[in-house]
Length: 221
Image 1 (cartoon, helix red, strand yellow):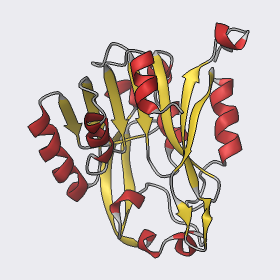
Image 2 (cartoon, helix red, strand yellow):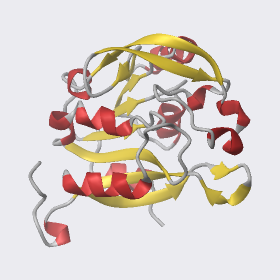
Image 3 (cartoon, rainbow, N blue to C red):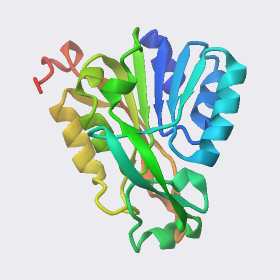
Image 4 (cartoon, rainbow, N blue to C red):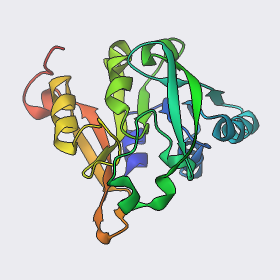
């Protein structure tokens, strides 16, 4: 079995862009697995960012920025859930409460939004892009085509059950990524349904650029 660490080592990743960092769980997991390169995290929620910033400051090679990412720069309303990992710019569906009642919105926050290309201007090297924005992944990508073109890997959480209004389906996301030149490299179940704990709600899907190894060149976007 291969995992994210194997991918990072095989691509010699030295910069990770962490979009939707929450309180820094992903960054902490990278450090626990031995990654010592640069981490640049983005989190718009006030309480979560405070904890993220504390961890980043103690690390020395980890930056934290308080903002959301989207297709265009501006302002947005973020729906903050009772459990902050479910925070999203998108509204919840009726199905969400069947999955986990902690998804219920506690309050809303007005947040700053920038594009991925703006966020990644100072990031160079072999980049791994991680996007965990609770249904808002496509909008992040649409604001970062220049950054996407130089990414060695893209890790996203993709749903099979809709818990946010307007989010894409798993198969739509895979097709979209194929159309812009990426194919899945690794897939792992993340959350399981509250009413069916043997069935996943979403999957972490790690994409790689497609090319000669696939027998054809990437499609131009």
